[in-house]
Structures are given as C-alpha cells and as structure tokens.
Image 1 (cartoon, rainbow, N blue to C red):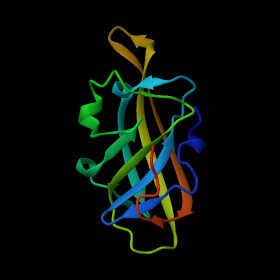
Image 2: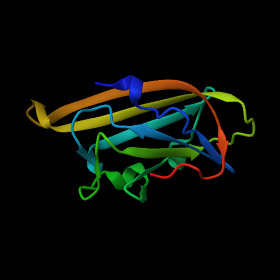
Image 3: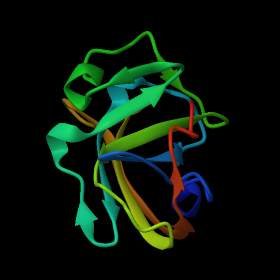
Image 4: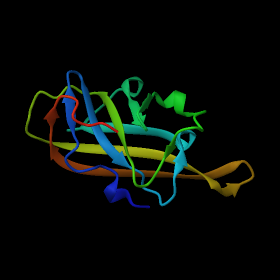
Length: 136
C-alpha cells in the first residue's frame, strides 16, 4: 500500500558478517508479529540466506519461523523494525538495498480459509555505516 516507504533511508549498517536496515510497515494499521509472513534482504544483488534473516521489533529479535505464532508483539505503522541477514559488506560506499515483505492482513477475508496477503518491495541506494548503529 505504501511500498516506497518500506526502507528507512540512511539506516543501512554492517557489523561483521551481518547487514541490517530499518523497515516500515507498508500498511495503515498495526499488525501482530504472526502476520509478518516473510522477508528478503538483498544488497547489491546479493540476497541474504533465508536461515540468516532476523526480524527485530519492540526490542525483541525473531527468526521468521518464530513469528508464525507471535501474537504479543505488534508492528505499528509509526515504528521501524530491523531486518538483518548475513551479507558481509566491506565497502563503505553506496549500496543498492532491496527489501521484499510478505504480510497477512487478518481482518480482510478473501475466501473460506484465506485472508488477504500483500507482497511489497522497496529499493533504495544508501551509504553503509559500520557497527550496530541501528536499534529498533
């Protein structure tokens, strides 16, 4: 719904083998963690391995398989989450960052046993900062 604002400009960080970026909810209402069905993080055409991806929101970090049953933590449209994965970046220059998100919208029923899901992506170019400067 608001895909061009998914990636927060200027939030790309690298800390050893991990790269992270802040992301915003491309929907107008808050969603529980269980509705965050998946994500991809790609930097300069290199996609982070799925098993290395981590999602941090409200001070807690999750693997995507842990989010499936997470109903206590909510992602609000005004809050950033942090998506990270194993993509080592040694170059301090500019990088093309792409984030793909899959979200379920639990209150919009589109079939007998099916809720609406949206797949959105955003791409931005930004300079990487070294260290753990991003915290959501």
